[in-house]
Image: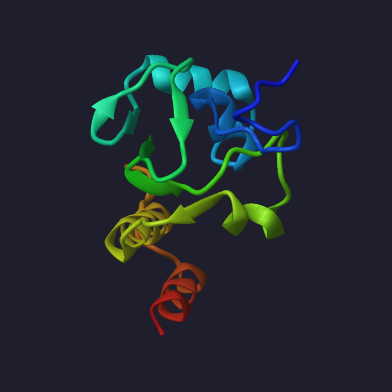
Length: 134
């Protein structure tokens, strides 16, 4: 039976951190979200967070994904995983542009990296690099 202070149709006020990260598509599976929390890659309001911690609207969640740190603000807690088009209803992305630039730079460096002993770039390789930088 619902309490008199909260209507039965009221949306949930919070959700488990690992479930929220999965439902707003930060991680592909809830198990990956749980593992990231346990590894210390997730903070809520600049405090390390466990997977069972409840997140509420207005809190900031920072998630370390490789070399990038995504910063999200909780708007609401969805009941289940949501589509990409509905994400603005549940979270606001506060990630600075410099974090996205780190990922772009890493991709370029990966393309330019050559195995040791593979010799000089071929004419085709040079043309591909020229196209990349133009």
